Length: 93
Picture 1 (cartoon, rainbow, N blue to C red):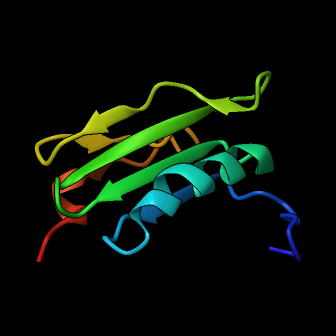
Picture 2 (picture 1 turned 180 degrees about the horizontal axis):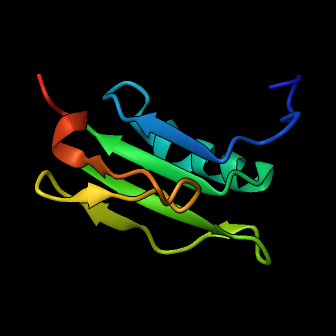
């Protein structure tokens, strides 16, 4: 970040929810990331052991309905389609 502006937005941002910042992570950051033009936004919920993937609609500059991925699934990032990330690996101890 450069002050309150993003110099060049990253292709993907991931937010790991924690009890103390959960509401900020789910609301304020979500809006800020859309405004900044971040194409893909993941919400990693450690308690639920899920990853919600939000994709930015470039015309409306809003995230669409997220797709929730569980432990048995894998995510193929829209911004790096040659990569596959097993959700179980994200939560591996």
